[in-house]
Length: 322
Image 1 (cartoon, one colour):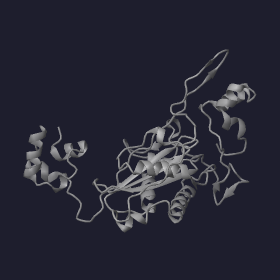
Image 2 (cartoon, one colour):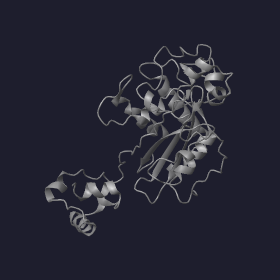
Image 3 (spheres, rainbow, N blue to C red):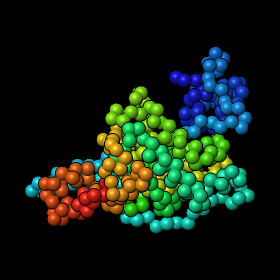
Image 4 (spheres, rainbow, N blue to C red):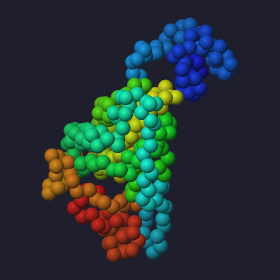
């Protein structure tokens, strides 16, 4: 069993553990029934950050999604895809704390500011253009108000966890990346931190080391996640006072495609007539509900009512990226 500092940090029962003396830590663990640290163990533990220094950002994996397979024969056997309610989410009002309660540096990050929206979109598109190997089907990102509203609603909860899937919907299901910091970071720095997981990723292989976290990188460069909405909240009662949330629509990180988050090839190779500096500008506006829709369309055709209803992308998007 690990000694107190590690145990309590994991359980989050004492968020100010760095501020306690060795004696106070040992008293606390005796009260909680944990194993006390010896002096040698305490000396070997990581030291707290210097005053005013940022702690490392905290990441959580984006939700991995996989679509069920449907088999059509004389009778159709359906297993509906989890969370595939595609109803549109009404837009609530964005709410942020009053300027008297938050640092000025926080207000500069608020994403109702069009300049921040443009920065976030441009940063993602720059990174998406620069993937290695290059992508033939990478869509250009754009800002999505519904996703931004959902992101703001969740950021305001100041919770170090992902939002429920029901709160990550526009007209499609969305993925999510989180970032938390003790001091304000620019949106560019937060997004770059997600992308930097690239160092542990190899195209066609996936994670290059055991237990490497790569899901934030793959979501940033997921080829068909072309709509994004982000938000930030100030959380004065948390150790990590700045909580950043980005939602990506449609969601990426399908388990069966994690090794290849885009199609390798010449930039815009799949969209030669709809290209903006290496990024495709022709997204399919529909979403298939089942992973074997291309096969169903080939076998049964879109005149089949079942196929048309459940495979609208495969039926209606012939040249668009889907």
